[in-house]
Each structure stands twice: as structure tokens, then as C-alpha cells.
Length: 113
Image (cartoon, rainbow, N blue to C red; front, side, top):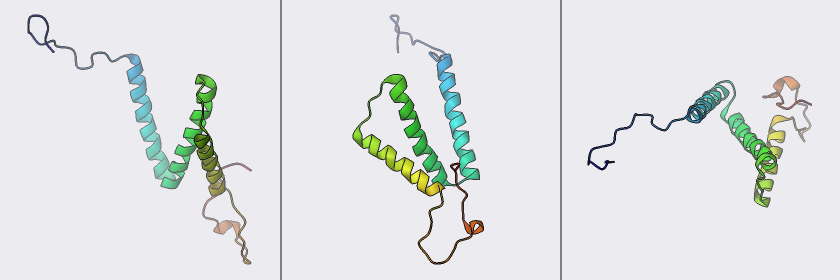
């Protein structure tokens, strides 16, 4: 970009950055570290479910705070996400004759009973 004397306009490297830009950068970096910790101590399926629940929760609060309108498709998707998280995190009785011991269950429930 040139000025009226045909000389280049020089600006500092981070020209226009405000405090809000740094806040957003820190939030994104913190989110990345949180995802890394979740994957390290849990698994990828749990991370995917947490992402789905966070989208539903953020949208729920967005409807009250910002007046966002929801479509029927989003409501159905949110319901499917919440039902799948419930079924994945709770024990469902098996329809078999053998009894499964609690010690043999692979994962403990995420939601309190």
C-alpha cells in the first residue's frame, strides 16, 4: 500500500491487535490444551461426545442470551446427541441369560445416578 508520495506505508507487525484479540488467542490455546488432556486421559469417543454436548449447551444458552432461533432439525440433532450420550454413559441391562459382574464393565457411568 502506497501513500500520496508513492512511498510504502509501514505499519507495526501486530497493528490493529486489541486486548480482545489476545483473549481469543488465549481461549483457543487453552481449548487446544484441554482437548489434548481429554484425549490423553480418556478416548476419542468421549472427546466427540463432549464436543456434541458442548454445542448443544452453547446453543441452549445462546437462545436465552442472544435470542437465537432453533430449527426443528437442530432440535432433533440435539435430542439424538443427548440420548446417545446417556446410553453410552449408563449401563443398559443385557438381554442374555448370563449375569455380567460390575467388575467386568469396561467403563463406569459418567452421569451421577
